[in-house]
Image 1 (cartoon, rainbow, N blue to C red):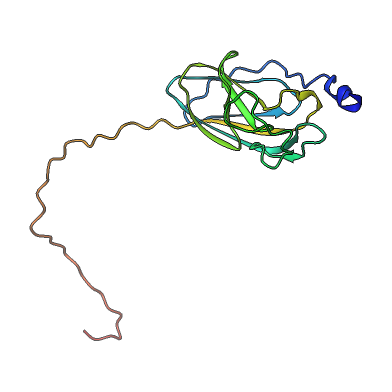
Image 2: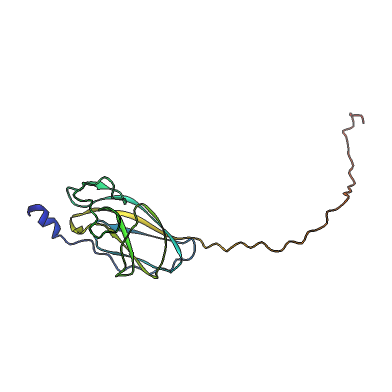
Length: 178
């Protein structure tokens, strides 16, 4: 096992308890998700039927032989890029779930998510052995602005004015003729 065994035994990132935020329409929550951490409580309870945009910037390495990647997990060594939980994304991607026991889903660099259930949002690096990972993603979660359904009001036609009158006087400079 050597260095790999020692690296895997290192403690992962410990997150402080998330401050709970209720996002109103258009509001955002920003946080860091570390590659060497477990599930990170984002501090937001997603509301069923509401739409959220999750974006991530940064880079991380999921183990010394995997290579650096962004939140999509693109370009990592194929040995590190599997999909062990069968959620449809490769290893080293940013993933999420709703609730502590929710089914994991891919987030990547940008996801528009309409919450099908209500519960706290959790995020992490998609790696089964995160303790040898380095780096982090800066994640922004924004609740979409709710739009009211547009129903035009009844319009009562107004008659147009048939004539327009104006009293206009023109004054020319003294040296010009009319």
